[in-house]
Amino acid sequence: MSKNNSNQFMCGKYQLDLAHPHVMGIVNVTPDSFSDGGRYASTEKAVAHAVQLVADGAHILDIGGESTRPNATPVGLEEELERVIPVIERLAREVDVPLSIDTYKPQVMSAAVKAGAAIINDIRGLQEPGAVEVAAEGDAGICIMHMQGTPQTMQQNPVYEDVVQEVATFLSERLQACMAAGIKAERIVLDPGFGFGKRTVHNLALLNGLPDILALGRPLLVGLSRKSVLGQIVGSDVDQRLHASLAASVISVMKGGRIVRVHDVKATVDALKVVDAVIHA
Ligand code: 7PM
Image (cartoon, rainbow, N blue to C red; front, side, top):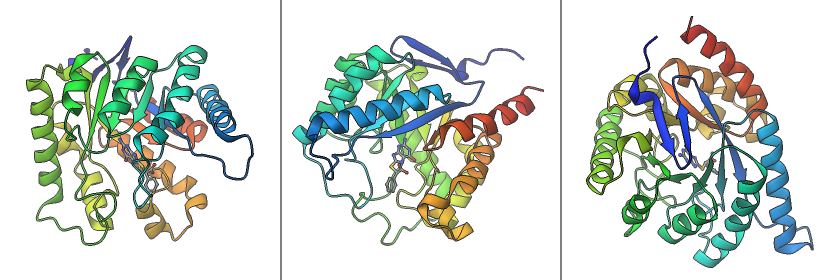
């Protein structure tokens, strides 16, 4: 099969060939209130988890200080920096996979890239003032995600006329804005933002509509791992959604997704090896 340029993802010193599916492991850095070890203990815990995810086969690590979690109490800038920067500094030395910073704050993006992050994962699609400029300064890869509303209110009453077309239009506009600021297309991946201001019908329409979003010309990142849409379908609690999440990852890649953002790395890596074999057969 010929090398398709739209499958190449440039992120920092890495170039990922997304003709093959890639697994992004989720690393949450949260303060451990039951430990008296304080900041150091939560750093150690996150680093140990991240190192295990790489051993499990993660191709990318997504590090987040929880500022982007729906319904979460907002995390202040200093607190977010204190959570994620020490973890990125450590992992930049200890693992050899691209590190992604999950944030919408330009100051966190900038500090994270300085600390060794190769990807900026922004649920707000670089809409925060100054975010596009910070992203344009370096050579980090960028994930642009769609969200309707804000994390606090987005699930109250999500309404779409045509969810696939509206998400595609938004992502297309943000892609243009990034490129106008000097960010090369090869540095950008797009994400429909499953669960971010979407009902089950919208999430399912988007999953079926991934080929229409892929038509924008950049690889797609998909995050469905353990999300409530899967709980709605299967009727399982968040810690019992592994099998539903695997089904979602397999379907996502069969529909054209190329990076899957997941909690359960080892199982997902195996499932996607089967998909990869089929895609390239
Ligand atoms: C509660 C609800 C806690 C949802 C955490 C979440 C995505 C993301 C998240 C995604 C990209 C989660 C989400 N989801 N970044 N960050 N795409 N690019 O399941 O779908 O981790 S937070």
